Length: 143
Image (tube, rainbow, N blue to C red; front, side):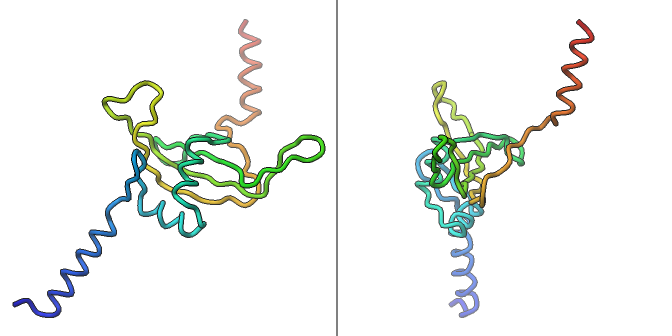
């Protein structure tokens, strides 16, 4: 007969392993970190999937082989027709191709993180403008 302590350990291990499993919803797999961030920023799984399916901006993620996508929250147009917003939702994910995927199919998506960004985030450009200008000048000189 196991002792009360051994029973406690078995239950704790079972809870630990149950929490370690990744949540799957169709082709989307959520990491524990993504679930935690979704709770922290009050983002539903449906909203996160919507951002992935219809992003306003797509950038290379900071982690290896990742993509970051953004969708503004409540965009408004002013009298001049310029669109503004006060908050953005970002999702970082990895795309995993299945063997039988057709070209253009979404495949399996592993959602790594999701967050709200206050304000309008700056667009990242991996090559600074001054370096791009120098490269353009060199191309002109070589011709």
